Image 1 (cartoon, protein in one colour):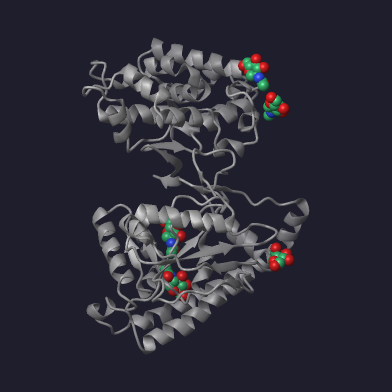
Image 2 (image 1 turned 45 degrees about the vertical axis):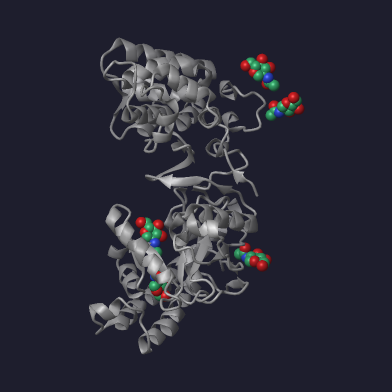
Amino acid sequence: MEKCYPATPKCPNPFIHVVKLTKAQRIKGLVLGSFLFPVRVFLAGFFFLIMWPIASLRMVGLSEEQRSRPVTGWRRWLYHSVVRTLSRAVFFSLGFLWMKVKGRRADLKEAPMLVVAPHSGFLDMLVLCPTELATVVSRSENQSLPVIGALLEFNQSVIVSRKDPESRKNAVSQLVERLTSNGYWPQMLMFPEGTTTNGQALIKFKPGAFVAGMPVQPVLLRYPNKLDTVRWTYKGSTWLDAVWHTTSQLYTNMTVEFLPVYKPSEEEKENPELYADNVQKLMARALGVPATDYVMEGGIPVRKLGGLSLPLESPAKEMLTLLHSDGLTAAQVAQARHRMLERCRAASGSKVSVDELHSILSLSDRQTTTHVCGLFSKDDSVDLTQIYISLSALTDPENLEELLHFVFPLFDSSGEGSLSAEQLSELMGALLGVPQRHTAELYEAACTDGRLTEGNLLHVLTSHPTYGRALSGHLLGEEAGLRLSDTPLANGNNNNSSNNKKLD
Ligand SMILES: *[C@@H]1O[C@H](CO)[C@@H](O)[C@H](O)[C@H]1NC(C)=O
Ligand SMILES: *[C@@H]1O[C@H](CO)[C@@H](O)[C@H](O)[C@H]1NC(C)=O
Ligand SMILES: *[C@@H]1O[C@H](CO)[C@@H](O)[C@H](O)[C@H]1NC(C)=O
Ligand SMILES: *[C@@H]1O[C@H](CO)[C@@H](O)[C@H](O)[C@H]1NC(C)=O
Ligand SMILES: *[C@@H]1O[C@H](CO)[C@@H](O)[C@H](O)[C@H]1NC(C)=O
C-alpha cells in the first residue's frame, strides 16, 4: 500500500470514532446494558483489585538492587500464573468470552519486542494474556493512577516522562539495555502509534520500539464485531462510551494475529525512523488500511510536511462548517471576511466580544457565534485577526498574495521587511491554525542572503515542490478531516478545485 501522502479523502481521519447504533440496537443495548454493565464492571473491578495485593507480594522484601533485575523463582511463577489468570478474568467479565489467536508468538530470543497495532483503547491490554504478560513501556502520568500505578511498578515497566527530556534519555537507554540483554530481561510490548485511533488508518510509528535495532514481531489486533465498540479516540467515543457499549453486548470478538518476526536490514538498524516506517507499512498492508504520516502533536492531530504541522481539522474548517450549517453562502462568508478586515484595520486592538463577532458574521443563531468563539478562545472575547487569517487561508487560497500582504507586517515587528525564524513560526502558526514548532526547514528554503522577505515567502509557499503542495492540498480542504463532516465542502470528488465556493 502506498504511503498516504499528501492526505486524501481515501485516508480517513483516524482520530474520530462514533459508535453508530440503529434504533433497535440502541434499545437492545439499553436493556442488556442496564443489567450487564453494573454486573460486569463490578466483577472486573473485583478481579482487578485482588491483583493488587498479589502484585505487591511479588516485590516484597526485595532490595532496591534486586528490584532493578528481572524477578525469578517463585515470585515469577506467582506473577505469571495468578496474575495472568486474573487479567483474563477481568476481560472475561467485560465480555471477551473468547479470543482468537492466529500465528505463533515468537520467543524472546527471536524477537525481544512485540509491536502491536492498531491501538484502540485500554481494552487492547487483553493482548497481554496471549503474550504472557510482556512488559510494557508506559508514561509517567500512569504511575500515579491507583492500582495501575502499582501494577506498573510490579511489572517492572519502563517509565517515560513526556515532559522531562532527561527521563526520556534514561528510558531509551533502559529500553536498549533490556532489548539487547540476550534473553536476560523478559519480552516487551509496545503500541508504536503512541495514541489511540479508530483503526481505519495507521498513524506514524514512534521510533522507540526500534531504536535498539533488534528484530521485532508485529502483532495485529482486530475486533471483528457487528458493532465497533472498543475504541476510544481523540474525538467522539470516550472511555466510558467504550465500556458502556462493550459491556452491553452479549460478547465481544477479538483476534490477535502474530506476524512473522521482522529482522531489520543494516540500513534500518542505523535508522530507527526508517525501520519504524517500514514496519508500519508492512502492518498496514496486512490490515488492509493506509499507512499515514499523521501524528498527535501537542494534543492536536496533525500531518507533517517539511517540518510544518498541518492540522487534520483546523478551527477554521470547523468554523466554516458551522457557518455553513447556519445557512451562510460562500458569498456571505466572503462578505463577512471583508467586514473582519475592515474592523481589524479600523480599530487598534483586534479583540472582539461575542456580540461584536455576531454582528460581523451576521449569523441568525447566536448559539453558532458562541460555538465559533469557543473554537478560537477559552473566554468570551476572540482575536479577530486570528480568525480572519485562518479563515482567509482556508476559503481563499488563490489570494494568498493579498493575505500575506496583510499578515506579514503584523509579524515583522521591527518593520525591516524581513522575518526572523521565530517570527516565521508565529506567522505560519497563524496561517495554518496550529502552533508550528519546526519551521527551520522552511526558513532555510525561504531565506536569501539572510533575509526572509514577503516576496521570498510568497514564492516558496506557492511554488516550492514541498510547501507549494502543502498549502494548496491542505487549504483546499481535500484531506481527511472534512470528509467526515458530511457537507458539500467535504466532497473530495468535487471537480472544481475552487470547491470552497460551493458553500450554498
Ligand atoms: C497511560 O496514560 C495514557 C493517558 O495519559 C493512556 O492513553 C494510556 O493508555 C495509559 N497506559 C497504560 C498502560 O495504562
Ligand atoms: C501489569 O500486569 C497486570 C496483571 O497482568 C496487567 O493487567 C497490567 O496490564 C500490566 N500492566 C502493565 C503496564 O504491564
Ligand atoms: C463474532 O464473530 C463471528 C464470526 O467469527 C460472527 O458471526 C459474530 O457475529 C461476531 N459477533 C459479534 C458480536 O459481532
Ligand atoms: C466531474 O466531472 C465529470 C465530467 O467532467 C462528471 O461526469 C462527474 O459527475 C463530475 N463529478 C462531480 C462530483 O461533480
Ligand atoms: C467550476 O466553477 C466555475 C466557477 O467557479 C464554473 O464556471 C464551472 O462550471 C464549475 N465547473 C464544474 C465542473 O462544476
